[in-house]
Image (cartoon, rainbow, N blue to C red; front, side, top):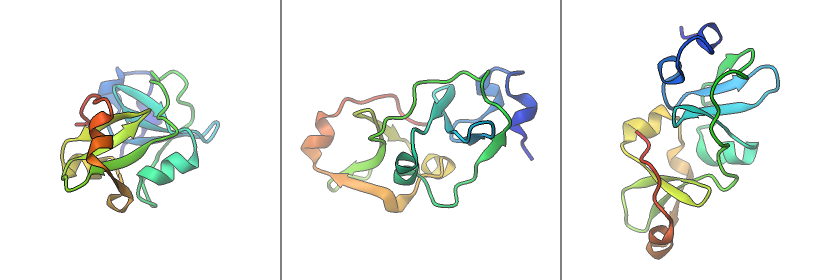
Length: 133
């Protein structure tokens, strides 16, 4: 079984934690998502509940202080798709990021039931960010 506490700080981040893992800092209860070659703080429970399945697995680490941290996920974080569209996006600070496959969606433990449909003109007005792979 993977023990993040045994390697955090000893390896480059991309070697230590695959993208999509959730890490809970036992020192303060903060929950992070491994994304973009770093840990992204999930800013509050509302953001967490808007994205993930209810029984999403979290790996515990005594302290994640030395791991590279990206900016926190936006308070507006959501899963969205356009009307009649198949592509699902992570909305993060007003930017849409395509989740490239169902396998990636499931690896991140996103919740299919929490995808919101938005008008296509709204979706197309949002800037596109990097794909989530």
